[in-house]
Image (cartoon, rainbow, N blue to C red; front, side, top):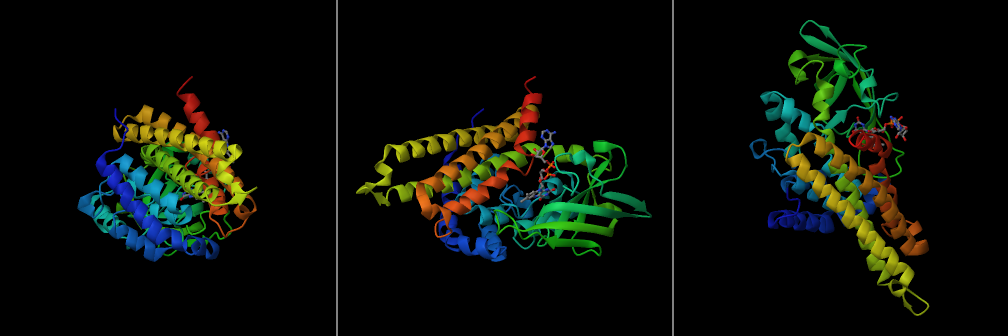
Amino acid sequence: MSFTTTGEHEAIRKAVRDFGEEELKPVAREHDKEQIYPEDLRRTAADLDFVAPHIPEEYGGAGMDMLARCIVTEELWRADPGLGSAIGSAGFGSSMILKYGDEWMKEEWLTRIAAGESASCSCISEPAHGSNVAGIETHAEKDGDEWVLNGNKMWITNGTVADVGVVMAKTTRDAGHKGITAFLVPTDLDGFQPTKIDNKLGIRASDLAEVVIDDVRIPEENVIGEVDKGFYQLMDFFASGRTGVAAQAVGAAQGAFDAALDYAGEREQFDQKIGEFQAIRHKLAEMATDIEAARSLVYRAAANVEQENPDQAAKFASMAKLFASEHAVDVADEALQVFGGAGYVSDHPAERYYRDARITKIYEGTSEIQKNIIADRLL
Ligand SMILES: Cc1cc2nc3c(=O)[nH]c(=O)nc-3n(C[C@H](O)[C@H](O)[C@H](O)COP(=O)(O)OP(=O)(O)OC[C@H]3O[C@@H](n4cnc5c(N)ncnc54)[C@H](O)[C@@H]3O)c2cc1C
């Protein structure tokens, strides 16, 4: 199995990098400071096929393979993780619609997401249930030819900007993971009530919300896939989701490293560039090595996802996410150190990468959960 990039992959990388340099970097600090969700940039990115690149061409997307999707994510995050997150997560949950949704759902929603007209959200986590997805309490009761949803979702990316959500709810109570169903929920329905969470450490251009679901009535044709099979359906996307977060981590680390490398070549102390001190050179060498090792694991995970090799994909996706996220935080920390005092304030991007990288150790399964998954496949 090859996990090296082709000329086409590198052309995609260059296109996203150009977009990041020209459109994202110049406005990154302002979007972070003011917590502005970049709706216009999302539309521009959609024109370039960088929003939801997994959506097939027949629904207006680019139909990119998993490795290309990782490269898009990596380069968006390299330019700026906050904006990269907002753009890259615009189609969050849409893989479920693509694989398990009815044709009308794809025609109505995938086309709008790919065009940049709409964003989607994936509503799984709850205040009392994060790592343990099977424990969710949001529930759906059948009433004639409708389902009535009630519950409380927490930490929902795009919660206040999405036009549609994929909501996981219990349809058979006390059945754990065997009683969960996925519902397609337009967010303008009565009873869907998001509240923005505006005190995040990082990725502050990205939208995050708590969502109260209060007697939301859904037609029965809005069930995605099969009743009570939602958890199994969700499992299909864990490997690609985690590989994607690992690519985010590589991008954040690369962005932090690039900034530190430039600064090391400019800043002088004791009548020489700081980049000539062995201490700084060794820092840069270790950072570059960590990034390349993480990138290799990400591309290997991507190749396994692409080959639909579920056991290997699950293992390598968790390894990639664990390694890339832990090292991204370390690399961003060292990058900040290269800047000295200048790294501690927002005049330079070092502190932003440091704050932004941290999320990659938490969402799509924490580092501790990744270790559990890896160990389960070893022992
Ligand atoms: C910015 C952001 C965006 C997010 N976006 C979304 C989204 O769009 N949709 C969505 O549904 N969710 C989203 N999440 C939620 C995210 O997936 C959860 O925060 C994550 O899964 C952890 O759940 P938790 O916060 O409830 O922590 P908990 O599950 O309460 O974990 C707390 C601690 O206990 C540890 N722990 C828990 N169980 C175990 C175990 N079995 N073994 C060892 N250690 C364990 C964890 O590793 C962690 O250190 C987002 C979160 C954030 C912060």
